[in-house]
Length: 141
Image (cartoon, rainbow, N blue to C red; front, side):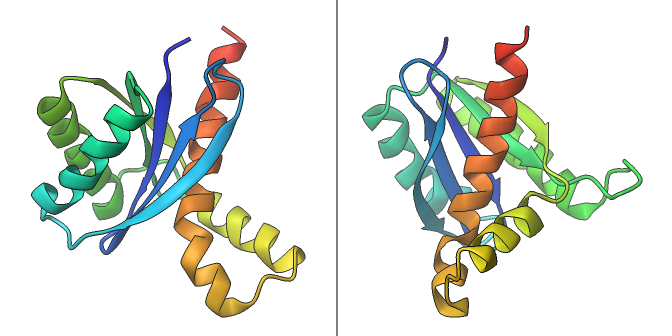
């Protein structure tokens, strides 16, 4: 199993998660600050994380509209996937992430995490859910 990195790409932050060595579970790593489309800033930190965790596959959340169509945020994710793929030479994969941020928020609320704390970890948590979705699907193949 390839070591994978999951990304929840927003306009100001990128939530980052990585898989364990066995490819079974996703762990949140950090939230990278950037201003879309300043790829250079984002790639500087992501390059370090790719190297640190020996990442071979980058999984990016693909926020389709609820009806399955592609809107501006999904297009931005597709563009990010192309850019980081060219930059790193690694395989990239888009994973449907409809509802992951809402699920992450609900889990944090259920865990009684304060609003301020939720804001700090929501993107990282969404990245965990995106990557876990990929790992679960890959495990079934």
